Image (cartoon, rainbow, N blue to C red):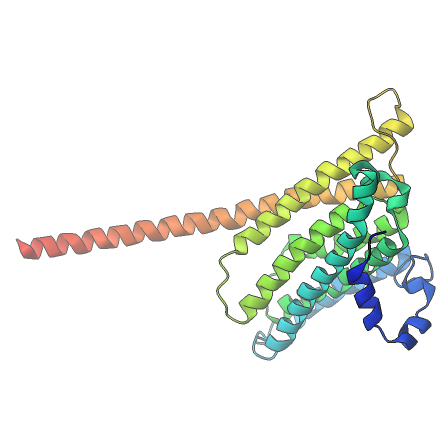
Length: 302
């Protein structure tokens, strides 16, 4: 039996009276009882998010951007998400690695037993993290930064995606969530450093990591979905057996993650192609200026 050192340490740090009073629906996904566990509640949450950010943008139109006053809250927000994501990642890996080691990778992503009680609790925490992360956009609004479609869509859709996977109980969920948490540790730490004016040369690496994450996600998710649909509807096709989870969750996961991949690739090309062109133009101008200066010097020397 593998000892859950991180889990035991975290649980031991929680006061006994809080553990005793924690209701079951905060640890297990119970539709209608767990917070934000119904379709109307998540629809209302997304609509509220959109109303707040676009309404806030209108309110900020004739106001100066807030920078100094929100510097500390922005730093705390990013550091908390950095450490929170890292801790949740460590807890999930502590649960997942022994399952894969004992039963193999296919069981780890497709076996019903790979959806454990602990993992369900972690998936719920990750789901609620998505609502906390919506505050990212509020900071953009207060700073009067542009609201890009990718940012708003990604934040909204990810909450819906996590909701659908909790409802569908897809065992493959840990792959997507673990990769996402790893990227978020990198991303939120980057934002924390930039808020402190610390130079961070790895901005491009964050976007590269996000794209890599979605590529790996899709390879695994497409494989799991194929295995399920082949074993269920076309058993004559080669497959390794069925895969745990509901069909609607598999389809929504594929559609959402595929859209992320294409949108992030487009963002990467648009952003860094412009940067490259800007640097090339600047280098050309500097070269021309240096050439003119050299000509003047040579002319005087003659």
